[in-house]
Amino acid sequence: MNKIEKKIIAIGGVGVTPESDESLDHFILNQLKKTKNNIGFLGTASKDDNEKVEKFYKKFDNSNSELSHFNLTSSINGFSKWLLGKDLVYVGGGNTSFMLEIWRKNNFEQVFKIAYEKGIILSGVSAGAVCWFDWILSDSMGQGFKPLKGINILEGSCTPHSSNIERINEFEINIKNNKLPKGIAIDDGVAVVFIDGKPTEVYSTVNNQSAYFLDKNKKINLKEYINNK
Image (tube, rainbow, N blue to C red; front, side):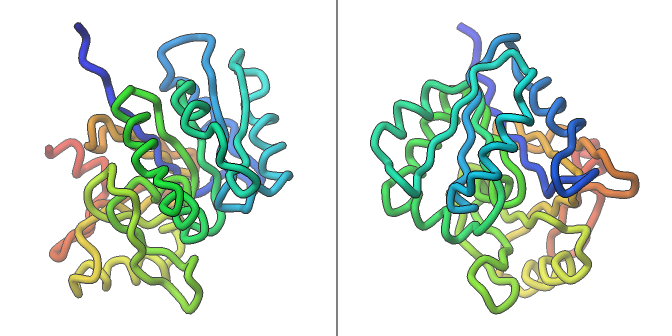
């Protein structure tokens, strides 16, 4: 019996334009093993903003996949069954703290962990990239960047949009001061693939944008970190 490959695709932020990044979209689709897939979208972090939902359908319209979304801010009924029927779930950006509060209140962290163990690909951008980690550096609680507890599928910490100098500096300071464990920073236009909990690939659609591994002593390019493992 083949071992189930457990995969997460974390995107630091949209790269080429604020609207979409077709190259990143294709990269996500190429992670799927089948030609016909069932892909779901969660826009909880944007309070299920219709515009973001519509963008999802446009984004994957020509992918030969069955597409659906679930508005958790309206109803939670049937969510577990919906999620566990997917090949890939794409979690949109927005307010990370708001999204995680809904997930925790309804014990959905456990459902995501079951999906992950089943081999359903968990993916997302910004809030949807960092939520899988143990800890997050987030500005979603107001009053600047602060540590926020994630759902602990991936060990360590993460911050998105690390092309923002203020954010990456705060991330570095928080790690050095023991407020966050060692972690990964992901620039806009960059996707990081994690297989069985370990980073295995960095894909960038923007020149000079990348992802980084940080601990108390160093900040290195994540590609270098992966190659030295």
